[in-house]
Length: 235
Image (cartoon, rainbow, N blue to C red; front, side):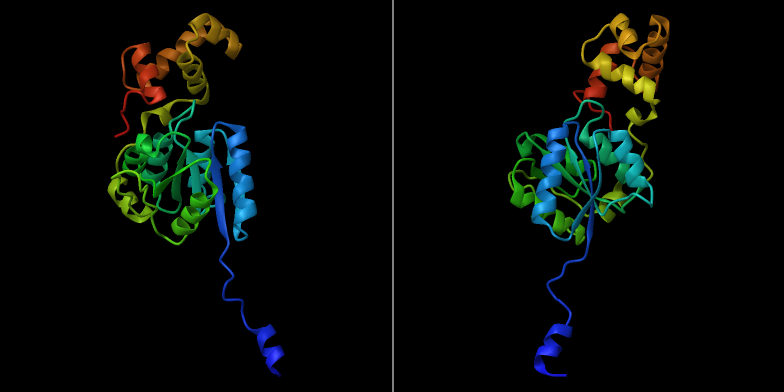
């Protein structure tokens, strides 16, 4: 074997291991941007799914068949807040590293993301830190926010801290109860909620009553505050 043959037979040391990625954002355009960014700038990355539903993302992350190496999740969403999704995943598993993304100042969500078990936070619209952070998390590290004092733990350390704590109450709701709460949080009254859900007013009231009970509050206003994240109750 000559030198050229040996060179061609040598392994490519700069080849990175494949990193599987899941994407969660309630904005389809943001999902498209993130997928395009990752696909174009990370040859080793594979976006295996993307979703606008926090409940769907949780189910996928907890299934061995669909759990990604890294989940990117928006922090501010209509259905469930990003910190609620992070905590629900981290309570159950350390398998998935979680990178929070936000279009707001990092200071708004960094501490909440760290407390909920995420491994880092980056601005949503800036390509370079997203790619670098994904690679760092996939290798088992953490990504400091830089602009804040928030300290992020590894997935294993965060899981050890949160394992055994209860799931966020929002995940106790059925899909229809969650749908009713989504509509309620947008300011719709019971009649309009019933119309949107194509059910009777009494049925809509039942969904809301059950949701309020499962959320552990006593009024519709408190339920909306908890649902939208303006009232914290994630422990």
